[in-house]
Length: 506
Image (cartoon, rainbow, N blue to C red; front, side, top):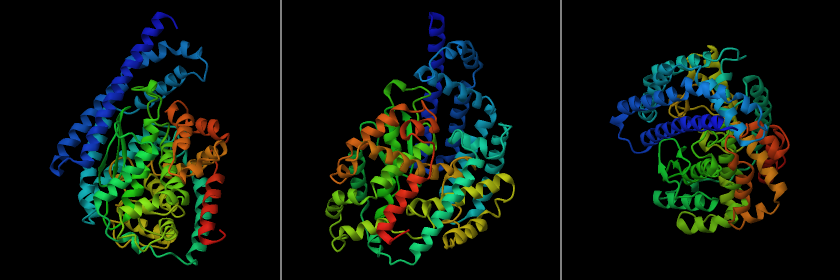
């Protein structure tokens, strides 16, 4: 690279740093809105968020970036495909070309709309008032279709929305994968329905909030979450957010009469945060300083929440500490009863509280419904009843209201309809694939988990996944780490092995 090319490369990265910083500001505004902002501040926050997103979009689509990318194209062509610089260039080119398809006015309109919709959702859900939300959701659906239409040439209207979250994935790929998964899971649910179940009522005893939060944070720190670079707060719907390379925050939701709720939310969001905190510091404030896809991100949250946090070895170490934290509530509950309770398989209404066997059925229901909404086969007015019918058909339970039905997840009320729910199931599949590779490399990992030590696993994940940030696509990362493309087999093998031990042959 000569001096002129170096100057252009430095300018390009400097321009992208401004986009990165504005994105962090937007995340900070959303975090505050979801945690501490007084409800009356919603309208002004929607305007502020729209302004920041518009400014970020203007910088992201500045023609100067396009000219710099063009001027550096020949230099890029001369680079080894595996080089970090090549990855930077590819990601910036992709991001620029995608962003320039969406008008800035639309970005501002959409951001303001979903910020307002989120505030309505926080009030309408507790009140079980879907009719209040319906006009907002109808507008979200219209805007989601418009967003997809900025990307002509796709086979399905949802494909561009999916590609934004999980690059390379399409409806044509996901539908058959999910159908295979649905059939296998449904058969297991049928088997388990006829098996004796452990009593889980002890999880509904009163567990004071302060002790719940402290215990969850203790485990987060043991996993490797760095509280000098983050913090945990409470919110309506738990999430992880990132303002910068060294400010990565998690949130949880506490129910004093549900011990599992906050605990596993904390472990889940910690998994997301470990990914972001583990990205190579050399990528700070660049296009590579992010997880490579939502699916890979979910693989990390689900790995730490379930494959580690719901494992027998994990609780062989941590249950005595939990019992010491809640001595009265757990005095009559032994380790085996607790372990079986947190892994009980039972069709339920709430996705975030679902067991590992039924969880993906919740995801597939949402994925199917949003495709039908985007295709025009289902109206927003028909959505609540369609939701109830799908739950009855797939899980054998029928939501008694919309609060724990169509309004339970925040996604459609804080973003587009389409493009996010598939990531949860993809993440579960990839989590098992990555974890199997980690165990192949270090068979001692599970024994270490039984001793409350997570260093080997965390270091393996950081070396093989986290440090790369967005350098590789999800498919490239899977092939590099596991030697295979996305495959269901490790996930199905994991579930079969674990739940056969609990319920008998699957």
